[in-house]
Length: 169
Image (cartoon, rainbow, N blue to C red; front, top):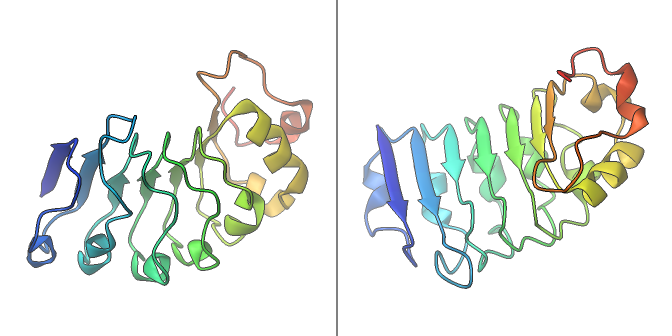
């Protein structure tokens, strides 16, 4: 089951009883219109594999321990939020394959994704991309198939990526 909603400030009460939800689209509009915080009720949904929080610029942090409870999550879209730091348990989301953190002032991305061995798609800003590549261990980069830096004003990727054989160019 998929649940789509836009521009809400809080997740619906009782959503944790909807255990068949696999895809949650909770997009914000930006400018303070959207969720007021990361919806911790998502951790109560055992089958969620796709979570879209794009544009919820009131979200600045993850609730403690939430990542360890999102074990099936494969896609996390949180572009245009205001997350400053990813939690230390971020790499507990072992199934995560797609991560969009564009336009977030995340300062610990390389450390946070170090245990995400299934990560294949990464979307981030150009300035974060170079920093990420310089600070990330090669075994994580080895699995990356696509890097999305659209909207950054550049179509080129840093030269450090030329030796990544799985990367689609």
